Length: 355
Image (tube, rainbow, N blue to C red):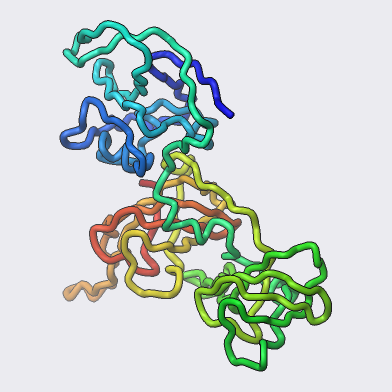
């Protein structure tokens, strides 16, 4: 099946009132090209970084409205991104070379290829450019991450293993109690959830589930029989089950939050202490604080406490900017983000704010 697309030479999008960051001018990246041809493997973040020193200001230079930000399937391999410097503020446009026509130059000397609107035929399977390389976050898009305290007791649990083994591997059988709906065939296996603590009060604000594998229901009953289909760690008695969710694609344009965000990094997935690029972290600002998938947050290393030797006063040094994260999954009180860049090691407790 084919998709018929009718488009002109340039794609211009209209900025919704209130979407701009403010009076701050857009800052182009050093040696920003006049045009760039999109290739397979590019991401929206990569492309915007070629033109902007701050890639998260992507919606402004493209003049995207809110709906296009939520569904930015606009760019495909082979498209040509053109930097328009003719106005008061730089703008990006898409140029697609279809058909034939003359060529020349605009007032700024930038080559212009004149084309008439034409019909372009494309195969539907051609994939648009994603926001980021999804390999780093795919495991987190449809797996259990945050569970409620009451859910812990209600979820099915593994009560026995094949041949009484201590741990199970791929292809082994597990026996579980509590599976009431035998129409659900695919299950996630997770380790007993650990609390995520508020950095100041040290009280739990959410419970994080550690994904350890997947299983398929083979025979219903009490106990039910499941076969382990994949694993990241050994699976054993006491591990819990959650129904598998369908994949949730991540296709949001990188952008700052609409409101002010002031949070902290609570944890890094799988518990390492030093955090760097491509690590996944949890922060204590979620949907209740206005955080949305696609939001970019600046990371600041929290200033150390020092003592003024003369006055004996205890002072906290200023926070220092150390990197950025991109939010990809949001719960009420918690968000998960991917570290996009880091000038030095990032730690649990560091501050996250608007970029």
